[in-house]
Every structure is written in C-alpha cells, then in structure tokens.
Length: 123
Image 1 (tube, rainbow, N blue to C red):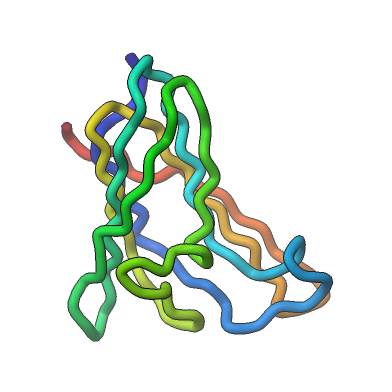
Image 2: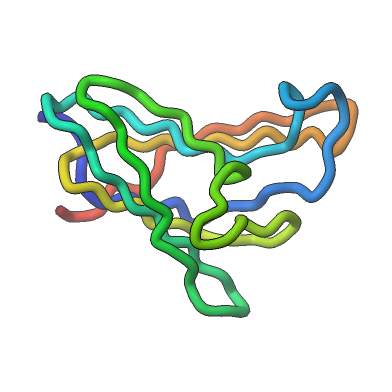
C-alpha cells in the first residue's frame, strides 16, 4: 500500500484576480489526491490561517484506485475558501492516499504554475 493518512500543505493562497479565459485560466489552488487502495477514501480537509480559527472539515470521497483533483476554489462547505488570503491545510483520510499541491497564478498575462508534494505525516 502506498501513501499516508495525514498530509500537510503549509502554503496556500488563491489569488483574488485572474487574466485569460475562465474557467481554464482562473487562478486556483488544487490538491491532487491519489487513492491506490481497493477501498474508497473518506477525506477531510481543515484550513488554518494566521489571523483566525481553523475552518473545516471539508469532506469528500476519492473512489478506490482513482485520482481526484480538488480545487480549493470549489470548496464551500462549511464556508468558501477566501481569496487573497494565505492559508495552510491538513488533509486526513481513513485509508492511505498520496497528495500533491498545485497552484495556477494567472493575475498577470505571464502565468505561473507551481507544484509541490505535500508533507506526509505519521499515520
């Protein structure tokens, strides 16, 4: 089995603006989740901020032996993820998963895309 049940992404930020056609070029944060197990993964995401209490959990399911690209821009329950505000996230799952973080920053015509592996915690 590959993966861990707890992941952290200490850097998160959804730019408040975008250039280019939507939705393809809308600035966003994404968690790419791989569930290579034979069981569906029940996943919870909690967001942390420098100036207020955490928000979450945001809940989703990643089907067995599938991948899911989850845009923070689309998370709205228990509340919408704020734009133009730094945050961190902790991702917890009931089965081992692998998480990667990606950001598209299209505030300028010269777009920037970054991708990093999340930190895998003990589980």
